[in-house]
Amino acid sequence: AQTVTQSQPEMSVQEAETVTLSCTYDTSESDYYLFWYKQPPSRQMILVIRQEAYKQQNATENRFSVNFQKAAKSFSLKISDSQLGDAAMYFCAYRTSYSGGGADGLTFGKGTHLIIQP
Amino acid sequence: EAGVAQSPRYKIIEKRQSVAFWCNPISGHATLYWYQQILGQGPKLLIQFQNNGVVDDSQLPKDRFSAERLKGVDSTLKIQPAKLEDSAVYLCASSLDSPTEAFFGQGTRLTVV
Image (cartoon, rainbow over all chains, first blue to last red; front, side, top):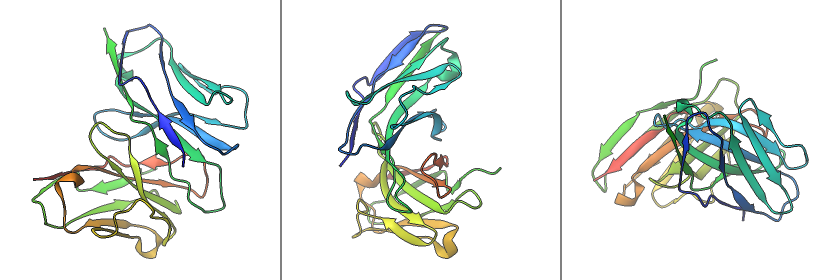
């Protein structure tokens, strides 16, 4: 079974600064997907960024980028120019590769609470 | 495009009572998931439907939890009887028949007293 570990229960950063959230995972699969989701107090999980394991290039979405180290099974999220609206819980998640309609639910870490200081 | 709709938003019940949650996925999404998120933890998959068939219910406590997805659209998740440890947020998500992204609803916060 796959596991996802987020070792930082809480992180704090000054507005406009850069912060990196850590995530490690364990799997025996060679092809899979990794995600970062944001969960504000409204509780709705919002996709921030995704990475396909077969792609060596790190994914980037505006101020959000990842550092994907497949051999080390590490998947960190970097948020540049932090904004007050970035404050939320951030979850790292793993999903097996497409299996033709088979089981492909997400496995989540415990989350990191990100605080943005004005 | 309308998102995933869930109701109710909040529910408080006494232990041993029963409760049901409803989810309406995004139109056309064949895959529907129910997750349980206990306070301070990440969501845990309870059950996955592909159209109206169950794909994965390995983590569903079948002695008290049940779920159905009639006609491959809406879904209900039921707990009977509820225990204190069932207090959590229940999230519904849906996706096209694709591995890339699941869209989540706002969840139902259940408190069992």
